[in-house]
Image (cartoon, rainbow, N blue to C red; front, side):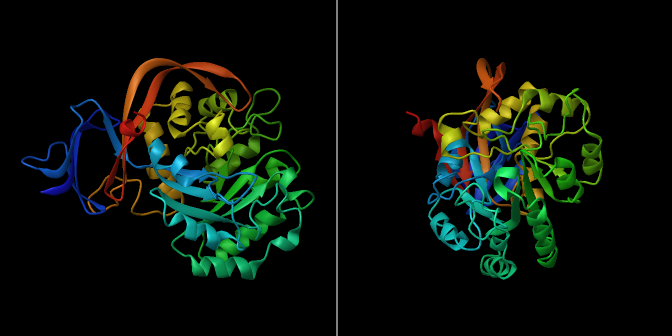
Amino acid sequence: MFDVLIKNGKTEREQPIEIGINGSQIAALAPKLEGASGKQEIDLHHEAYVSAGWIDDHAHCYEKLTLYYDDPDEDGYKTGVTTVIDAGSTGADNIRDFYNITRDKKTNVYALINIGRTGILAQDELGDISKVNKEALFDAVHDLPDFIVGIKARESHSVVIDNGIKPLLAAKSYAALLGNLPVMVHVGANPPELKDIMQAMGKGDVLTHAYNGKPNGMVDENGEIKEFVYDAYDRSVIFDVGHGTDSFNFRTMRIARDHGLDPKSLSTDIYHRNRENGPVYDMATTMEKMLQVGYTLPEVIRMVTFAPADNFHLLNKGRLRPGKDADITIYNVTNGDKTLTDSNGNTETGHQLITPIRTIVGGTVYDLEEQHV
C-alpha cells in the first residue's frame, strides 16, 4: 500500500498515468498500477493532467524587502508551483535570513545569490561596485550550499548605473571558482548594450527577460532578430522567459519562435504587485500565454519542469521517476475565453485555460479546490 496513490490521470501527451508515493518520494509509476491501493487515493477519472511539480526559476519572495517581495507560498504551492527559485532578491548580507524564513514554507524554496551583497534593497544595488564582494559571497555559498543554486546579476542601466557589465564579469569569475555555479542575467534598458551582455555569456548561463519588447531587446526596429542573438543561442546560452511587469511581449515571443529561438525555461518574475494586479498573476496564466503564441502543452510543461530543474541542477526535481522527489502538479486544461495581457499592455483572447487543482510537495497533498471554496 502506498501512502498516496494517484489513479486514472493523464500526462500532457494524453497518455494514462498512475503514481504511487511513499514518504517524500515517488515509489512507482505506470500507465496502470495493477492492484495498487493507497492510504490516500486521488482518482482523477481520466480527466485531469499530472506532471512533475511546476518550478518557477525566477521569482522574488524575500518578504522583508520593500521593492520586490512576496510570500513564497503565494507564488508557490497555492498556484500549482512546487518549487520557486528566488532570483537575486538577497545577497551575502541577508540571504541567511531569507533561508531561515523559508524553512517554514510549504513550497520548496531555493535562491540565486545577488552578486551585490545587499540584494535588491534599492533598484540600483550594483551602482556601487564595492558592493560586489567576493569573500562575502563565497562565505554565503559555503554556509548554504543546498539553498544557493546560482548567482544573479541584474544588468540594466537603472541597476548598474555606470558600471556596465562589470558585475556580470565578476559573477562569471566567481561562478567558475565555485565549480561552475549557474549564472542568471537580467537584461533591460541600456546601457549596457544587450550585445555586450550576451557576448560575455556562455554555455549554461541563463538569460532571463529574453523576450521583452524593449529597444535593447532581441528584435530590431524592423522586426528582425539581431545577429548576435543567434550567436548566443548557438553557444548554448539558455533563454528564459522571466515574464515580469516589463519583460514579456507577444510580438517578440512570436518572432523568436518563428526563427527557432525557443525558450528553454518559462518563469514568471513574480512578486506581490504583479501577482495581485497583473500582468503576471501566476504560473498558469503565464503558461496560457505560451499556448497562445503557439507552443504545445507538452512543450510548455517541459519549460516548467525538466528545464528549470536542469538549469539549476535540481537533480531530484522536474521528473516523474521512481526515487525522485514527490513534487507533483495536478491540473485541468479546458476550453474557454480569457483575456491575456503582456508586459506592454497588449491583450489577446486565449482559448485554453490551465487550472491547477492539487499540488503535492514532498508527498504532502494540498487540495487547491478546497482553498477556493
